[in-house]
Image: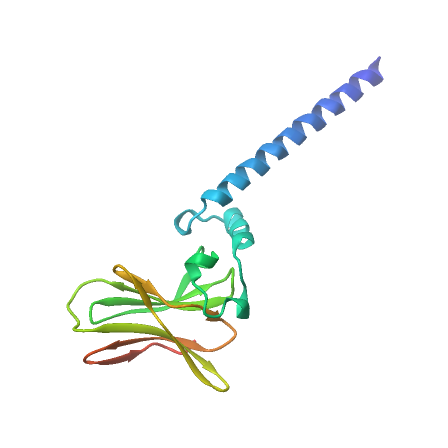
Length: 162
């Protein structure tokens, strides 16, 4: 009779463990569906990387928002020029960079920004496309040097080559 009790106890323990794992899997899956840049944690960042649709060179010229690469991204360089905040962004998930610009204040007659990437054959430029007061460029692989550049009617500001 003692053997049955131990077997029943083991079965109950395995069932409880299996249910806990199932609940944990459901919670993690729900977190992936609702994860965003502001609520990213280490476990959800790992899950977000699964959702990214490209990596490295396969991301070249693609939209960081549409590909999932913007989640968990950080700034490599940032500055304000003529009333616009310019950020040289990096995605550890996709190993890519891009430029994001946001209107802060001021009245520059004209303003543009772009990502400049240094390649052996020459530099590649990707302009920031505006979506209201914020815009961003396409991405390029982090394996190449790149920088953010801002252009206005009064001059050009070059960020650091990184």
